[in-house]
Image (cartoon, rainbow over all chains, first blue to last red; front, side, top):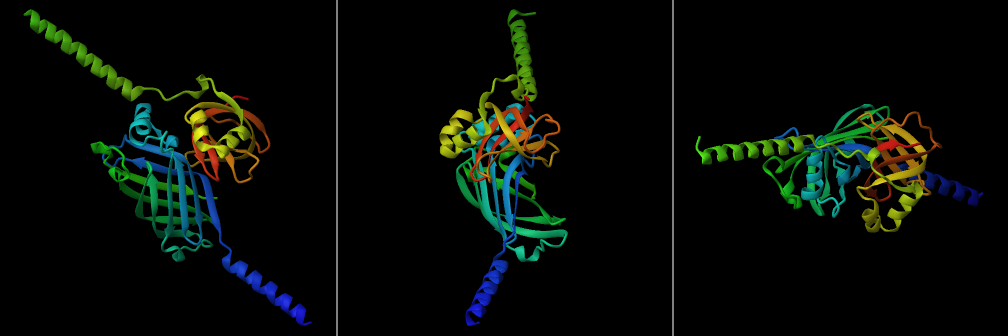
Length: 176
Length: 138
């Protein structure tokens, strides 16, 4: 009887522990990130093959390939890869960070939740801390993450012209 | 008209035309059309193994190249711009060959075996080898 009681208690404790730690992670291999010059609408690159993971504990990561960015103008796309981002040498860009106010997001309740994100952005082989405000929209249990923030390209060791001195990064990722 | 002035006008005119032609070329240079390129032929599993083994070597062989892949469809979806995206299975259940199609490959189902061509844009560890500008061959 004593053993049975101990086994029941251990099983209950283990199950409770597992429930408490059950972490839900959402992912996508085809999220969208846009690089755009705020002063020239033509300088716009869209990447629809962004790999991203979002956990309900607040951890957030993005991984993208520089060669996946598409420009309207082929010549601009070539320059972006060969003269600015040097995508043969630095083929990937990454972000690893956290949503600092994740407790305000209810993943079980449809709605739009304002969030604050902070983390490390690696581009062109250089890692910098970035922060941004954004939103998480929950619809039918699936999150959509949106954010927009500027970067100074020189901070990442990238050569800059007047129109590309500052670039706005826009995140638009629908998770499954 | 003086000879030197005539020469200057002709030279200026040629320069102006050349400049305009260059601008026209920059703004209208066509994007790569992978359907007209000869692709490196391999299977989705071979492509995955090449990157798993040595990313730098695989980048040298396949990055930015037209590749023609035969593979088994694992999942079909649509991206946020309405393009068809097909994931091809590998022997790692968490790793796929992720291809965004430029032209609609039609009604594909998981389990279908197809051959397609596209441009390899690289490798994302623990996720996928990415291909875009995909076109269905058969």
